[in-house]
Length: 88
Image (cartoon, rainbow, N blue to C red; front, side):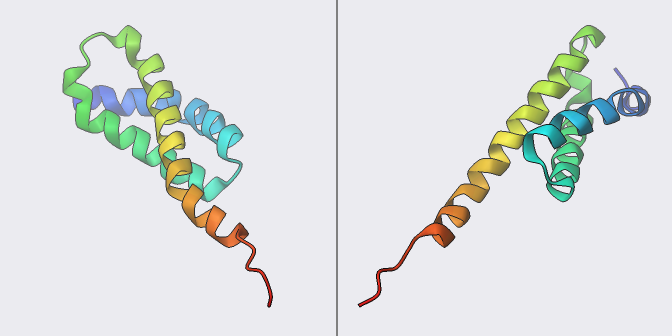
C-alpha cells in the first residue's frame, strides 16, 4: 500500500471511526484526539499492511485500543479528585 492509499482510506473510514470512538468516550475533544492518533498510526504503518481487506478491522481495533489507553491515562486523575478527605 502507498501513502496515496492513505488518503482514500482516511476519506472512506474517518466518519465511521469518529462515530465509533464518540460512542465510547462521549467527549468530542477527546474523540478528535483519539481519531487523529488512530490515523497517525495507520500512516506510520501503512507500508506494513499488505492486505487491504484487513484495513477496516485494523482501524477499529486500533481506535478501541487508543480509547483504552486514554481511559488508563485519565483514571488516576479522576480517582484523585474523588478522594474524600476526612475533616477533623
